[in-house]
Length: 112
Length: 111
Image (cartoon, rainbow over all chains, first blue to last red; front, side):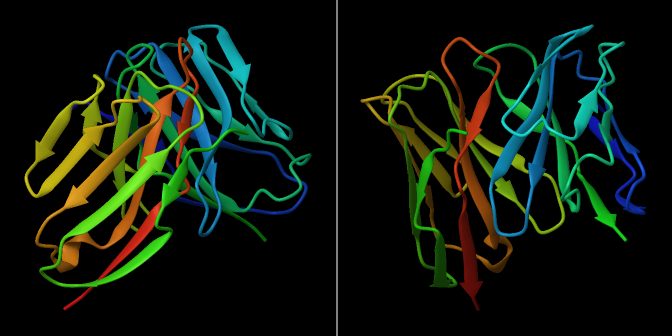
């Protein structure tokens, strides 16, 4: 089945530690995205990538980093510089501009 | 960052009732997308609209692309308990890969 896979579903991190969230897609989509969702709020764009080896900051990129070494993969690292990392993180992909965006199941990150 | 204005923010309705929600923007969109999100899950695409004035149905759901290209509407007919969730509108900013999302409409259905 084609789709987007995020792992893990739940993640716990100690303060001061970096953590990497995985996102893999087999839809052959060029563009991939990371969003953050806080309770009762909408989606905010962290980073997006239009093509391999290229990515752009979104609205809330501070404290996050990404890489796009393969078309299928777009991992997100939440660094210790992110002040409020506890949130629900969503990965998405699109084939091109003005096309449908498809989402993964999300990763809930909790800092303990 | 930019966001779409979505209303109402929340709705409590009786099972069997029809539901209407809308999304407005200060700028023109070429594509409108409607999603449903269940708690703890990723949003699932319900309907995609690509043309001003377009009216598209998906089962009990009907969505319309406003003729001004600055708004869109989603209707759910004969609501059932599994319609509970958060409904988001979304659209890509013109000519870019950046998608903007509405603030969501939280729907609760009372049996």
